[in-house]
Length: 390
Image (cartoon, rainbow, N blue to C red; front, side, top):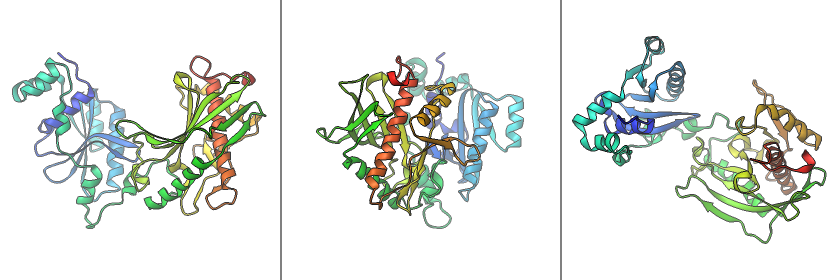
C-alpha cells in the first residue's frame, strides 16, 4: 500500500472533509496566525471555526501543545467559538486524556481507512494516490477563502478585523505602526537611500574593501511565484585573498511568506539581505524591517540582533564570532529582553537626519562585517575563509 505523505493526507481531507465530520466548509490551508500555522481551517455546520492539525503518524504531546496554543491565540482575537482537533494514524490513551483536559478533539484516521473510503467513494482520487502514487490536482481546485477574508465577513462589529492584530509578527518592533501605509513609506524611504548610496568602506583594519559597483545598475529580481521579489544592488569585495574581487550584493525585497505580509500596505514583507560570494559557498545575513522599524519617529533601532542558525553555524562558534567582532571595533552587547540575546550596536538612524546616508552606510557595513565573519567560520568547504581571520 502507498505510504501517504502529510500533503497527500491533507489533499484527501480537503476533497473529502466529511471524513472529519459532516457540514464542514474549507476556509484555508496552512492558515497563518502570528508565528503559527494550522494545516486546515474549516467553518463547521454551526458557524464555529475548526482548526485541524494533521499527523501522518502518531499524535504526540508536542502536537497537543501546538494546537492548544493556536486555539488560545485565536480565542483572544475572534468573537467566535474555536474548536481544535488533532488527526493522526494513532492517538494513544494518555494523549486522549491530555486532549480531553485541554478541550482538544481528536480523531484516528489510518491509511487503511482512507484507502477503503476512496476505493468505495472516489475512484479517481484512489487511482491517483494509491495506484499512481501522485498527488491529486483536484485538491487544488477546492474553493476556499483566505482566513482574513472569512474573519472580515463574520466580524460582529460590522467592520473588518484589523489585519495587523492577527498577522503582526511575534518578533515585531514595539514601535511598528498599525498603519501599513506609514510603515511602508518609512521603510521604502530607507530603501531608496540604500539604492542611491555610493558605498565604499574599508573593513577589518583595512584588510577588506567593499565597493558599490557604480557601473552596474540596480536590477529588479522576481521568482516565478512572486514570493521573492526585490531590487539587487551589486557590490565587490577586494582583499589579499581576492585581489580580483569577490562578488557581493544587497537585496531589498521580500523573502517568501514570513508571516508578516500585512505589516505593510502592499502585503509584501521587507528585508535587507547582504550576500557575500556566489554559488554554494556564499553567505547571507537578513535584516527584517518589521523588527527594527520605529514608524512614528521615521527611524530604525540603533542595533540589530546577532541571530544564527545552529545547523549552519554550531553554537560552539558563536562566542568566537562575538569576540572577533569586538576585536575589530564593533560593539556587541546583551539585549534587555527577558531572554537576553546578543545585539550589534550601529547607532541611531533617522530618515530626517542630515547624516542619514552615513548612518545607513554604518548599518550596511555592520551587515557586511557580520556576513564575512560568518562566512569565514563556516570554513572553506561551505563558506569563505579569509587569511587575516585565521
